[in-house]
Amino acid sequence: MEKYKVLFVCLGNICRSPAAHGIFESIVEKNHDSELFEVDSAGLYSGHQGQLPDRRMRHAAEARGYILTHRARPVSSLDFLDCDMVIAMDDQNYEDLMHLAPSVEASRKIKRMASYLTTHKISYIPDPYYMGHDGFELVLDLLEEACANLYRTIKDEMTVKA
Ligand code: 4NP
Image 1 (tube, protein in one colour):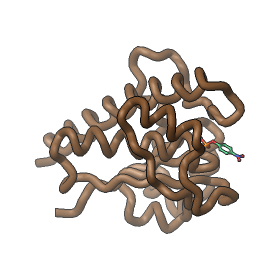
Image 2 (cartoon, helix red, strand yellow):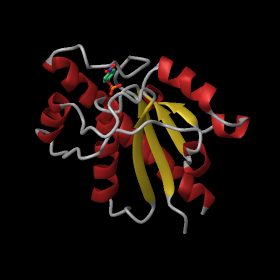
Image 3 (cartoon, rainbow, N blue to C red):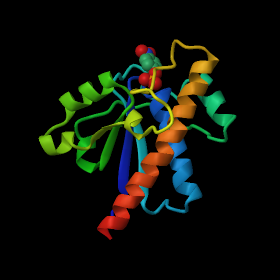
């Protein structure tokens, strides 16, 4: 069976999207679902290509048990061909992905990460790059909740289709 491929996208691919990538992968592994999902992340800005996630994000994530080892890469219109879902962290990411999508069908794969939040009342995942330590903790709080709800949503869809 083809794996369900989720691609998390932010601007630099060194803070938010690699953290979402690591958190979602950890949920998949804890639920013994690695054969069902493929998880990846990418950035709209290619300036950090090849780099590990920002040290501050790696440290904050590690304290919660997530080891982030992704190397930054730019998102491409080809990503839409093999991804089932492309998840934008903020409104600018969403708009940029909409422009990159090669077809109307591809554009339907784009979702906003904040749409999976339930208890936090915020419509986007803020960029922590110029924020202090609390910013990274807030982003991880938001991503943990959104990833858990996203995982449940996709699993429910799989059950309906099966
Ligand atoms: P991210 O954060 O989009 O969450 O990876 C950023 C990291 C770097 C830059 C912008 C955002 N930057 O412009 O270098």
